[in-house]
Image 1: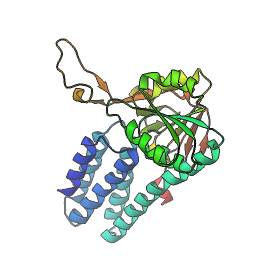
Image 2: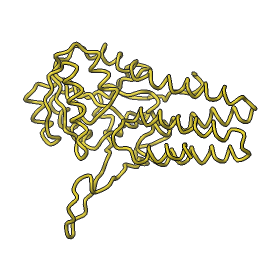
Image 3: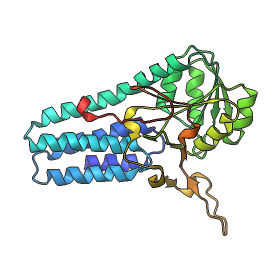
Length: 294
């Protein structure tokens, strides 16, 4: 069934960011609704889909939040006897809001950070790339290669095509390179952000934040409000561990290859969180997007 194929696609994906995966989550609900709205088992299938999406990528609250919002919309409409067309239109409005929120967050970040000449970024964030598109070309952007999958190479190519001066570096040289290139702002995305400002992002984010903070660099998180998880506390965060083969295909006796895919950056390291809903500074008390606003 198409909606289950989309769940498997999301679960195995390594090439897209949190926003794209959240939008695909909405597509899964639309596929289920189009096929099974009149089925007597619809609510059970709806609940199963929501649970499958919530569990498939636990470090990405964008998927969780999108799934819970879709479930709330669809369940409420089904119980009230709404037409399937009306439900799908509302889910498409949710999808449109999420898509537009990236540009709105990027615009606020450009207004806030246009003064800086030298930036550092880590991993691949479509929202961060959108931010750099809104800046005048010619900024110096230091980009980590972002192991193990090297998505930083994609980031570097995209930034170069915008006319920025890109310095591609190893993850391990972030501290020294930031000194060398006079980095002023470390800007990075988030797969999940807790209401108190803890950030789940690609592994390496936390240690880079610690390193550059000591240099006086501003640590700025750029994300959308649907990535806020106000139900999660730091001691309950589950950081995903991925396949050892992403690090090496070599089998080594008595060596465990541990591919920790995400890390948790504490709010004490964060200077600003910029979302479509505003620019936030510590102490943080962040709120997620509410489906009632649609």
